[in-house]
Each structure stands twice: as structure tokens, then as C-alpha cells.
Image (cartoon, rainbow, N blue to C red):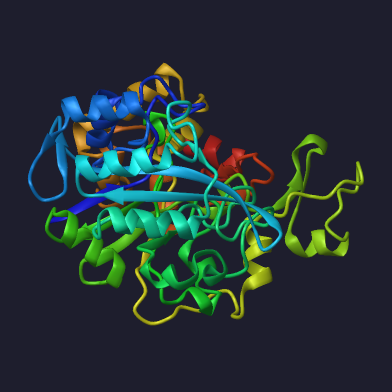
Length: 408
């Protein structure tokens, strides 16, 4: 069975998250995107857990069902603690196969943080000690290191992370299910560092609103079963884990170095030449993902280790439409054209990846069809994101080119 999965999202009980991130909103958007398996997110939050317990149906294989969408029990926690004399802030994703195990994990974590205050709770506990305990609760529980390069809250983050997996997780390092690339990096960047070759890379949306579901995702061809899926991920089986869906990493909001308050953005090489200091205010720059990857890497960009999961870069369909019609992503015009396309051609992933260009051109604006085709070919330009500011994508060419298209 071939299907897409987005394993890392948040419910409406997480901070800065849309009120539409409930089971109805999540499942309906998953259908539009073409995603069959969604993470629940936030199972440590007592109200969200009660909602899950009351509404999702157990199907007996570690997965659940709501509104014809499969769900897997997941949560993200923010581990904040001191280790080796340095403050660490690490985000981790926990995956569990049963409501009983989820409840026990949540009860354990509640001793170290206020799980009722945020869907992504702050836990004052070492990542390795937490991982050890959740494995004791249920040997089928797993951990994915979340968005591993993000500066402020990740395993390798420049502000509070570690320089190796072993430094963080010790003897439990090889038991980690996977590393999540995050929006500001892609597999090709991660392949520059040989020390993480033995870990599978996954990509998820970390969505805080329905529209962002599936902006990164994973494509599998295996049984829809908890043990099968986790085994395929752990082994990095390229026959069953077909590819990941990736942002263009420059579009992520921490790709370059920079200082948002001073509107300063720069490539790592330029930042190094300025000793990583903002030239306007004299304060340290926020060191971005590309800089951190270059700092730890031992290979040139473009190297691909054998047996790695392939990937495909996309720009979300709403974003392509918004650029084509020159309206904001959240406008009624963009949403109307988005839903028209899906009603006539299939799911978002089918349109972005598979539907023939001529078929797209028949049912929508040519500029939209051309935009989809250019993304497939990688013909995009991105002004890189930095210090919390998303990058700007350009996929439709010059203003003159667009004006010429409109003559036909």
C-alpha cells in the first residue's frame, strides 16, 4: 500500500496554533493533501488526550482511525536541562502504539513539567533519561529527534544543542528511530556529515495550522501497521520507504545566519568573515542551519551515501497559486482556485508530483500550471530565510516573462 505520512503536527492546544487544528480540521486537510497517515500530536495534553480517547477508533495494529484517515499517537516535548556544563534545549518526538502507553508516558512526563499548559510541554529532564524511561514503559515506544538543526531547540542546534548524537543520548543513541531534517535543511545537506549515516532521515510538517499540513512528508509502500512502519523507518528500507517530501531548505526560517531586528541576513562564509557579529548592532548573529551543517560536516555538498532514502523538493500548491495570481496564501481567491484544482485533478500531492502538465493547463490559469512545472524541474529562486524569517520563493520568472505569457 503506497501512502503519504506526516508524523509531526500540533493540536489546537499547542501555543501559537490554529483553533482549526482539531480532528476534523486535521483529517479534512489530510484528505485534500493526499495524506493517509497523520500523527496526532500533543497526546501529553490532558484535554487533547481525552478528545483522542473519545473519538479515534482503535484498529488493533497500533494505529487509529478518524474520518477515514489513519492516525498514530505522537507528541513533541521540549527537553530543557543542563548537561556537561551547558544549557540544552532539545525537541523530541515520542511515538507510541497504544492509548495505555501514551497515558503512562504522559503521566511520567507530568512529573517534570506542566503537561496541561501546552501541547508541547517543557520537560526538565535529560533527553537520554526520558528516552530510557519511555522504552521501559513500552518497548514499542520510539523517539525521533525533531528538526535536528534548528538553532534554538534541537539536537544539533547552534544555540543549545550537541556536537554529536552520542553526547546527547549516550548508550541509547542507536535506538533512536530517526532524525527529522526540519524545514531549513534537506537530506542532501545532512549527507555531508558521515557521523549520521546510520540514521534514517524523515521529514514532517510540524504544522500549526491545517494549510501547513504536508509541507514536508514521507512516502511509504508497506502495510498500514505500526510495527511495519516503524521497522521500515528504522531500517531505512528504500523498497518500502520510497522518498521524503522536502521544502526548498532556503525557504526555512533558519537557513542563513542573520539578525532579524537589524534586517541582516548572510551566507555562513560572509558571517564568518565578520566573526559572526551583526554589522549594525554589534551583537552575535543567530547562526543558521547551513552554517551549523558546514561546521560539523566532513564531506562536500553533493555527496550521496549508498542506500539513502531519495527526496523530492516541492513548493506547497497554495503558495504556487498565490504567487501566480498575486494574492496572499490565505485569501479566498487562492483557496477557491486550490479547491477547484483538487476537485478536478486529485489530491495536492498528485497535482504537484504526477498530473501531466497539459492536464493541469486545461483546468486552470497557465501561470499556475507553469509554476507547478517549474517547481518539478527545480527552476525556483529563493531568498534564504534567517533568524525566524521565512525565505521568499520565486518560481514564475521575471515580470516581463509573466506579461508575455498573459498575451497568449
